[in-house]
Length: 122
Image (cartoon, rainbow, N blue to C red; front, side, top):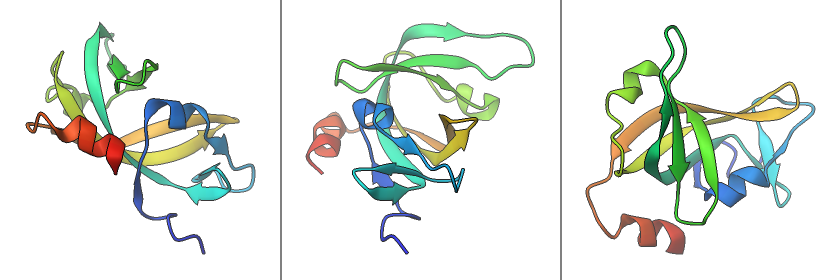
């Protein structure tokens, strides 16, 4: 059993891009040989989103590493997310047809201005 498998691991955007989906277990991925299934990250929500009826809202997110990702966020969390705000996001890393999918389980608006630096250092 891997130590970090059921732990929320702090990841940056470029870490998400380097995750390798597990062909045997769709509920896990690996990074540097360690199996991961949960993540925690801080995202800065930037001005791009798409709202379509009956679909998950999409937000463009940047964590300061100059890598932008597009996140599908459940409608119940979309009302909490504001543009230009640091947001702490927790969730699961899933594999779907050979690609990675992030399922958000918790969204918290981060009020501490030093939280981004502390996230990077940890």
